[in-house]
Image 1 (spheres, helix red, strand yellow):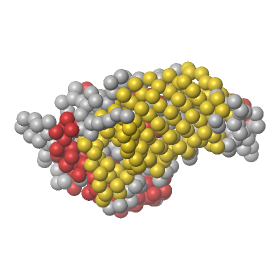
Image 2 (tube, helix red, strand yellow):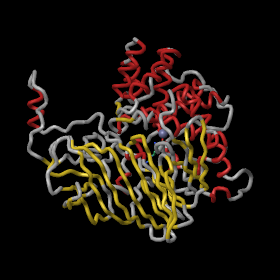
Image 3 (spheres, protein in one colour):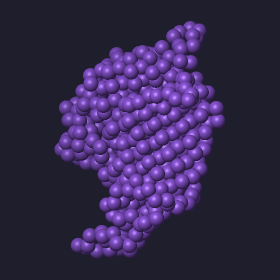
Image 4 (cartoon, helix red, strand yellow):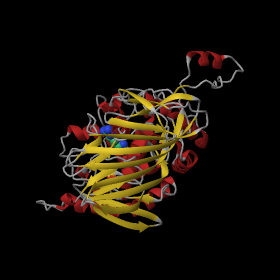
Length: 508
Ligand code: ARG
Ligand code: ZN
């Protein structure tokens, strides 16, 4: 469901639209090809124009012995314009059949674009069911995200646009949809996805797991983890939890508890974390929750996959660090998943809030105050990359998109805002932001406008300085920074985690 759209207008339509008093030209009756992208300035070909997806029904068989995926994707969508053809995003894999409304359709492939031409053109407003049969070995993306093949299965963490490595998708957060994942895996393995487990059955040496995610989500938030997992199912405060932990994480280690024990203890705190976050952000937005921890050190970050984040095992080296990453990913359920960004340059709205949740948790845990977290970063020298990268427009390269600035300078922006508007106004603003934008796609401008509205203050300069001006803000960090009272360093970025070669994961 696209709730807000970056409109790609043909040149003539732009000219018409600019005439005073003239509305944007109404779409003609002539069916035309749908746009190959949704116009994201960073990733122009992500997503596609001309339709809104309502539901993905993914039926997949995966054999870890060959890494081969065999699948059928049934996509229910509504055409938003007359279409002679339309695109889906799909990276690699081999398509063997496509039907649209039960009729055979033709298709072509070009890079990440799958172009489907239905037997009959689609009318504006028409509901349309497309079935795509495909197979192959899903690719892992160069930054080791997307579809990761593990020792006994696979795990998916595809932000920003890795969903297309394992299913045909309108792969942009502007078009969230509900998802059913039915995964068939060799008997003895588990298959975990988003939402609620609806069915599990075994026949002929294969077990089928059906997961249903009832709340719409962006495609990058769909996950699938296959392998040996201890699955723990429970309910707390009306939320149904499924946690999945790789049993390999419980192998005894010298000098401390195994990672599995730390991870299990952190996940056991999810109901407490969700309850605590609810005070800040409003009621937990989904009916299900839980976490997935696979023992694969190639995965060096965590991802807020909706209702069921995926975690690198590298976070679970000590309890505080484990708890903090769970806080971060759970905070994303509100800021990132429920409230989603309309274009990737606004990612600081996700990461700034999730990082700020870490700071608040550290304060609650008595480790250091949010002010001390801020002060530590403020003490970094002017040469630090933290001051070079712009949270409000970090750039499309993944090391920029997921840079420390987006996370830490993003959180500093929120802290500076809180200091400027005061405790009560900040609390009201955050609540209102989440409740007013629930289910919507947002931009930085939406946030700054609401901040000005709720506070009654002119905040241009603050946001301009913190989000869009390179260099260390003047007058910052003059005082010596407070030292942390316990072992957790201020979080870095996922790219920093990759750079530190697996000994430490500095953050999400
Ligand atoms: N959004 C994730 C988090 O902060 C990090 C994802 C990093 N993605 C990547 N492709 N490296 O929790
Ligand atoms: Zn994050």
